[in-house]
Length: 628
Image (tube, rainbow, N blue to C red; front, side, top):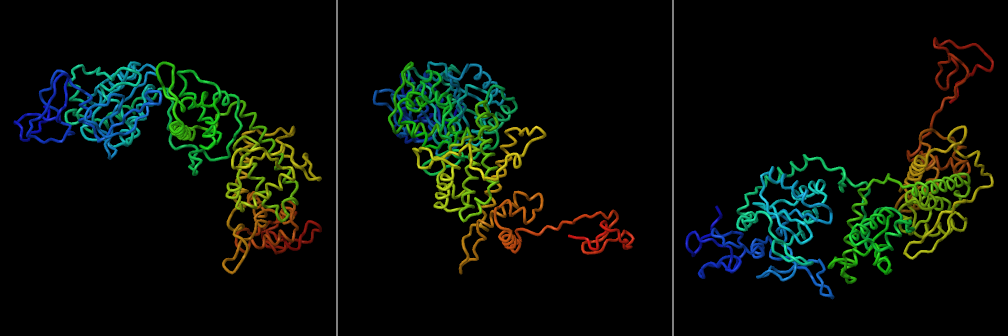
């Protein structure tokens, strides 16, 4: 039985709100009655026809609705802006918000888009789930293109977390479901039954055919859908295995974090790769098919996100008309009548493109980075080979990095090698601020180090349109006169076959990461000693420490450290003493085994047997004292 509100009117007279129209007539309470218009209570004696637009205005969970806006050409832009709740329905397209100001949903609307496939199959599947969960529903045809809206009303407002879980679970199993409106309680809205569509036609009731019954199911007070039924719905949907051909967008935690860096907006961490392959360039410059406009934009932005582009790079693409009419067409226009599209102004274009960019960056962060094309494999193999040559040549010339500016120069070179391995490109756009943070040096120091590396032919400058300087690692690095590739190379067997590219790349990345991490420790970069603090050990001591970290699996002798760092033995000994005083390094004790087969002596003792008996003189086999 429908609820009744009685005031000064006759007992049993139902109240919906003053002036609510039903078809040709209208319903008004007695003139002596003062009733809040938005009561959400329906009358008992419904007329034969129901004005659903008035019904939704009366049941609106907010005091505002979203109204579509017109372009300069008089076309609907499909951009809904909030307006105060009107007394009468707007003449153009508008949407009713699904959640109240607290973010709790009054309606769950499953929006099926015919552009994604056959909506009727997915609607039938959803209806089975709803009936199993004992939930009532109302179906409406959203327009003339075959889309469907399935309205499910909640007796009490639902938490957004529960609604989002239901929407994501259903989207993984229903390919034509557009679940984005259920994931955003702030702006999620749907055109109500009876509201006009921007391309013509109106949203029409389909099930149930009895409009009075449909009005009861759309009203929270009479729908009889409690919160437990929605929990059952979630359990029922999750019990159904997801189809193999439906991509699951969220797979646990993102593989790569998403950064937000001031004006650069959302981006993936790493150095941007500004060179485009043929496929990405064609997506950017060629006009997409009319039914692939949004798909091309999503594919293009995802590719650019994986290349570590930022919002500033994406925004610059709008300057070229070919880009606006090519891959960015979806962001610069709205769907019009037929194949015609409505051009957006610059402000709306930027807002729409930035919204799509942030979505694609978040999606790119969840993608696995192990899928590599043949082109990428060939490119990364070349980069790994060049970095190996650079590192081998740099290690063979230790005196170059033992000079006053040597540690900063080597850190700048190692950082560029690491970024090249990560990005798969020898051409790098690296500003001095990020270089300073990554190496532990100052910005001016990194700037001068880049100039010195360029003069020594380790790097070469390239043209740059952005704030960061672009440099390229040279494939042929300078070599020390004593460099011998046969002596220093590390072969993979008797035929000197190198290991696979992936293993070589991972080993180089690990080695460079450990070296840079050790070099930027505060112990070495805390400045000179003063009255205020003890100061750091300096970056030259840090170079010695880097060698100890790199060969932490075995002890190193003083002479080996001197050969690898390029410092004199006295300098290396002084570095080790300072490290030992701070308990960063320790002296390794190694026993020199001799030829006494049964010697049980401790270090410093004469050779003895297990019974404690001194061995007789045996010439060169006998040691008077065991050495350490």
